[in-house]
Length: 154
Length: 154
DNA sequence: CTGCCTGCAAACTCTTTGCACGAAT
DNA sequence: ATTCGTGCAAAGAGTTTGCAGGCAG
Image (cartoon, rainbow over the protein chains, first blue to last red):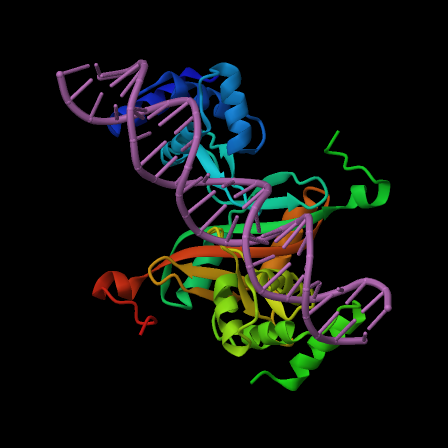
């Protein structure tokens, strides 16, 4: 079950924005925060429906932006057509790089403390001020290439 | 007009792969290499049709992967729904960061030689070997914010 | 001639939206 | 009571694909 603290954060965010707490939003919230790995909208729908079968795809898509704006989720776009999301843990590192394994399709997030410096360096050459940035690395799994199985895949 | 050298490169790539040179592929090729800025599939279609009106959308979409595999074009995904492409100049820098201006929607590419080091560092922590990487920065235009017009927009 | 290429249109994937009903405040 | 939120299904955007005919090699 999701932590009461996070649930309160969600509730107060909704209240602050004049939005209502509904059973569907709560189901989606619990489903999202219960995920260990990155997940897609479709996967979130599936898990939310396990909690409340009345949840619709439309509501998932309408709730996702609410949760990202409230900083409960982070959107992770790896340029693969569909967007991924992941819980944004309290006090989480905002300077992260995504490493996408081309063999197991898994997304790893690694602290990248120097990224803001990179962004500033690169933007200042253009007279621009960075708003957000991401470092995305596609990488292959050495073990998989050798043994034919990715050790992280299980 | 496109350089004969690049056209030869395209021709020999096609030959090597057992693919045929057609008037449509040549029109798409010339249209693509004639672009100064990043362009979308739709924009490429438009320009290719100005050269050969028989070019279809399907052929553009079928030719784009051929041109990216032959390293004549580079795909630039800024996570905006549609993909962008740009000519990949001979001896071009593979270590580039994309800076997307949120005010003028333009995409700038900046040499970022530190990136490969960072990709290696980050990947090795996971036992992975980097295949490709990109730093993507969203930035705002200071001049635009002050004066209401982006100096690069003209 | 063989079989790769083509245009057309339909299909596909992911996401967004209009509508009328239902529920939270 | 008011609104806002919802499910449904249709609409969108961007891209891919099946098919029958056409052209390169």
